[in-house]
Amino acid sequence: AQSVTQLDSQVPVFEEAPVELRCNYSSSVSVYLFWYVQYPNQGLQLLLKYLSGSTLVKGINGFEAEFNKSQTSFHLRKPSVHISDTAEYFCAVSQRAGGFKTIFGAGTRLFVKA
Amino acid sequence: KAGVTQTPRYLIKTRGQQVTLSCSPISGHRSVSWYQQTPGQGLQFLFEYFSETQRNKGNFPGRFSGRQFSNSRSEMNVSTLELGDSALYLCASTSTSGGAETQYFGPGTRLLVL
Image (cartoon, rainbow over all chains, first blue to last red; front, side, top):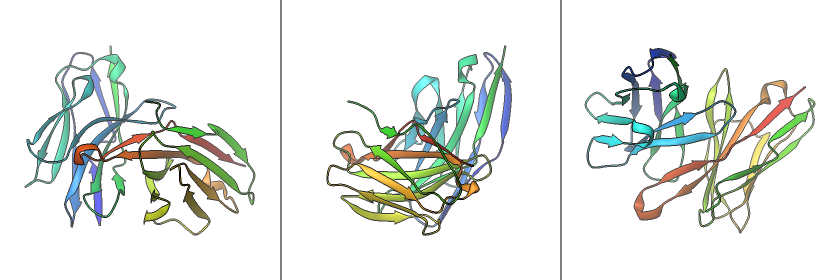
């Protein structure tokens, strides 16, 4: 079984400041790791994913995440946020075999202030 | 390529009724997954279909069911609706191009049960 913990439910930050959204996971099998963003009244958009290889993953909109196997973490970072980054962010894991079954964290609400 | 489409976008039903939601995946994608999103429970996996067969199932009662057609379009059905079934229902289709499995989400169907 897999589980995902997003350590912060809300993160307020000023525009142009750096931000880190934290995510820890547990799993008894190998997994893929994802970050999604959800804007109000919209579906989920993939920001980035870790499948294998380099532990530093770059995504869209200037976001990046680092996979840390020993700490079972996959934190999301952006060096300088914009007002338009205000949204809900979800960390997710999916088993590597046996089909797609994605488990999501509870979400982190990023609020960028001017 | 057209994205994942879901119909209808909004739906109002009363307790005890049943409802059918439809999802058309991205052309060429054979896996379709369904998720329920509520403020209290977050994003929860319902089930996944691949080549017309249910491959994975979440922890939902039997009132929730689904199916997939030969053209990969999928429907989910909820019978005997309860107030707690009010939610955003998201469909995702999966690409396995190059071994990199990625889910693409539709905009969702918002169901309100009165």
